Image (cartoon, rainbow, N blue to C red; front, side, top):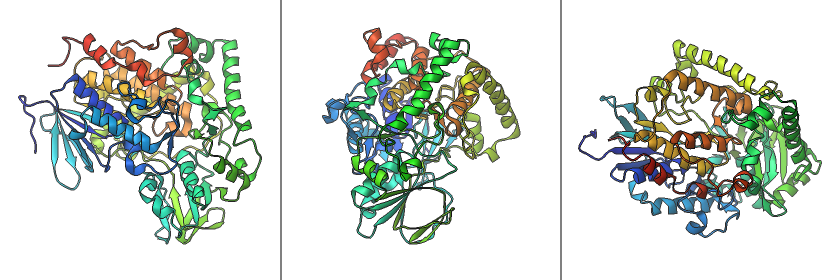
Length: 571
């Protein structure tokens, strides 16, 4: 076992080489170039969700080029794509590879190396990182867990051992798409209702396959499909701060707009807010692809009719005329609202009794959000996930009491969240993440233990910006440039408030993970304020309000933090 020496360079381990892990590693090296850094990732290539093995023809990012990069390497410079261009997954991978090369991260990587377990070192200061299969244990002073939420496929409990066709999760389309597109495969079943299902369907119909698209009738339902461009203009061009004021955000309750629109204290504000969300609910259903009535489209309307409470993620369409045409005609795509009961031979049986011919099945069924890196007792103490059956009664009681009080507070602050539409509750088998600022175990913060942080645990539409700012917040904490004056009880109350709000705002989705899709700018602002850095980054107030935020707005924040923290850093 490696040992930690006070004379040796600080040993820093990052687990995960996606957006969060790469920028965290770069930031740590920028703050302290003397560290001994290792980045572990179980995949063959870097990139996380965007690693080379997950990419396949037609796989596009929802964000355009220019809004999906880091502040210190614009995408247009790294891979030559013009801003606002559609962004193929392969180009995202190439960008992240260029980023890792530019900042000398590649030589610190151990790819194809899975961390199986993390435990506290006997000195109670450092961490033991165990490598699967080799018996190797790496001991580090600082550990940044950046595996994110989209690493472990969620497989539904369906018997398919007697099925003779191809079975893959959407995660593996990149490595198996040649098998999927072979002449042997003519009929494909796609199970799931959101973006990954649509990506798989487009790949299949472009290759001439017939697709049975199956979406459970008791799940979150299909995601609202929205054309990302209207008259050639990308929707992200309209994503300024002005849109943030319309969402009931727990992260900005000190603002005028909260008091006017969301507090319930202004009749005019209430009326405006309800009208806006009613329009957001109805208008998209009059647009492509919902503008033509047909059996498929009737089955693809969102589970709830209220955009404030959509139970599934939005699904962006990039034109994709053939996909829309086939939805309308029903020739190559047939939508079923049912559950798969079983699979055997070359057929799939649904719970409504229908049997469908099937040569290949793609499970676009999302992700298992439970992390198993830590033993259950450590997971519960740190605020990461553990099975509910492993939670002791004292911990359960502690958090249930906090949650009940927090839920009441959330409803008092946001009356609009009191009466959600009916939806299908998701069965939950594990505890939620309970981390201060979505990053820090409150138990460690209360002891001024700066050895462990978690990154990449918020689902949002500003992946790169949030990754960059949260990485700086985390490294600043670890290096003594950021202090937290709150007690454990105060931090736990905030954690419970955010979890209660997330469940009220995002319903079934919000019970299993942290989501801030429409609120991520507010989350980023909170972190910037914590660090004492400038929150509003654009050159004038008009641009700040009406233009979309970009990573380049945050250029230089690491240096700003270093300048601000001179003489304060941990020795």
